[in-house]
Length: 147
Image 1 (tube, rainbow, N blue to C red):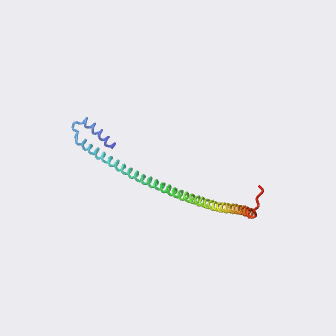
Image 2: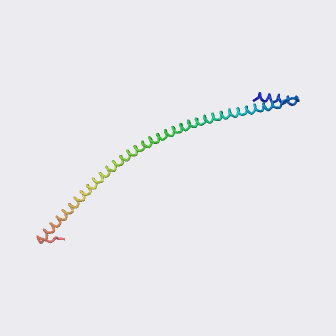
Image 3: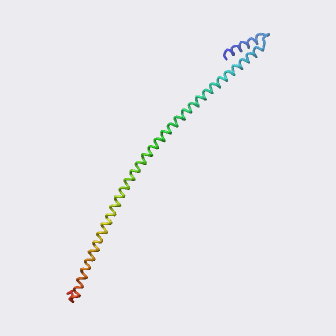
């Protein structure tokens, strides 16, 4: 392109100084300028297309990297969730065992209380029976109690 500018300056100087100058030479030079402009434009478009391809490739790499990171994060989350489920189930089993033991102890205490109350009732009945026998003996012997 610089050579074309140099030639254009040369032809311009010649056109000013030479009365027999042929203007078609400048037109030929202008066509060369046009061709050179198209070449530069095509080269820039090619460079832009290459940059677009590189950017797209870079985006695909970034997407793959992001997807890989997301997959790793989801795997870690699943492992964490499974571990937490195991811990919760173990704690639940422990609480169920404790509640079963407490329930069994409660049943034992209930049985003990029932047996104790039955013995108390039996003792009260025996005492009342003895009192009644004593009272019947007193009535049948026609003795009156001194009080």
